[in-house]
Length: 219
Image (cartoon, rainbow, N blue to C red; front, side, top):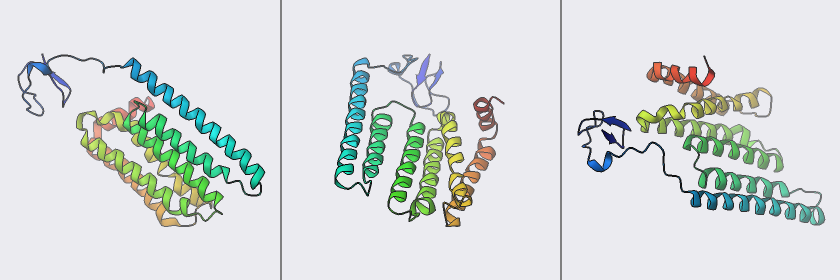
């Protein structure tokens, strides 16, 4: 049996039945699981734990300095959200072997939290909830959609993360309805884009998408 590395299918033929790539003897070896480098994983885990320790220590030092020097303005929150985003990016995005869809979702959620805290600390100007957060969520939906179209046969692994991003697409509308956001059109665009993406998946992916929905929600 020969294996096509592009389509991940097994065939007795010399050519892949999907992409027509000629299969060589070197491609015939079956790898049921990806290689696991135990030493590399230990190094990554140690770096991640060390980064968390340094981040927490830095926030605590800044907190005490803030209380001593300028207690009337808690600028330590700026440091805290910056450290939080740096730790998420390092531990979950750079060092982790997590699914790329999960990395994108984590980046969108962590950036949203950072922007909301900075906006609130800077005097509640509301630039984050009015414009940046809706744009960020829409961009996250777009990126995952593009990846799903690109990876072809492996797109089903992104369904859960796409559904999470679609759910996040309604957050700006909720913020507007609760009065936290004051500009309607960015929130409306994000919600409509989320609905349009879901509808397109139903139309073009049809049975495969419905099957994945059933598996995720046990329907």
